[in-house]
Image 1 (cartoon, helix red, strand yellow):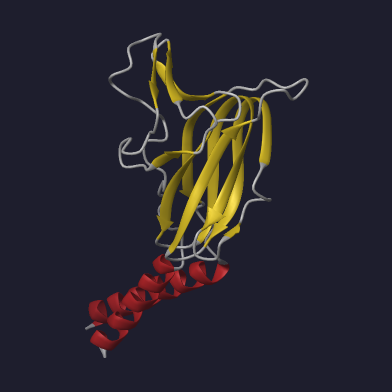
Image 2: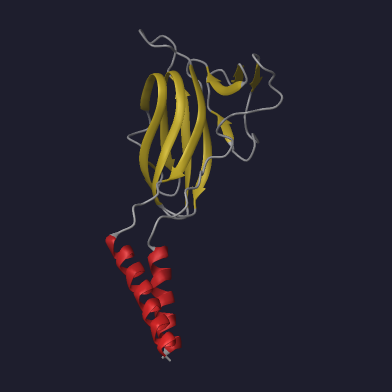
Length: 203
C-alpha cells in the first residue's frame, strides 16, 4: 500500500514538473558576431560567412561581401545597400519562441519554413528602420528546418539609410506560465507524500 501511494505521489509530482516551464534555448549560434581576427576599431570583409562558428551564414548580396565591424571592442555585422545574409537552424522542439536582435539603419528580416516552403514571418520583407532592439514572438514547429534572413534596403530609396548593422541575434524559447492543473497535481502529490509519512509515524 505504501509503495502504491508513494508511486502515485511521484507520478503526480513528475507530471506537474513536466507540464511546467521548459528551459530556454537559443537556436542561433554565433549571433553576436565576435571574431578574434578583427582588431578593435577595425573591420574585415568576407565574400561568404559560411563556417562562421557553428552558424551557416550565406551571401545573397549584390556586392557579394559582408563586413564584421569592431567599435570599441563590440563587433557587429555590417550590410551595404542591398546586401543580405541568412542562417539555417532546426527546431527540435516546437512552441513559442522570441526572435531578438539589435539593429542600426534600414533593412528587413524574414523567417522561412523550409519544410513547408513558406514564410512564417509577416511576408519575406519585415521592414525595420532606425536603431533599437527587435523582439518578435514566433511559433515554431517540431523537427522543422528554418532560414532566418537579414538584409539592408537597396540603394536609391529616398529618406532611408541604405546600410545596416546587426548584432546579438537570438531565437529563444518562451518560458510558459505553469497552468493551474500543474499546481493542482503538485499539491496532490505533496498531499499523498504527507499522508504516507503520517501513516508511517503512527505505526
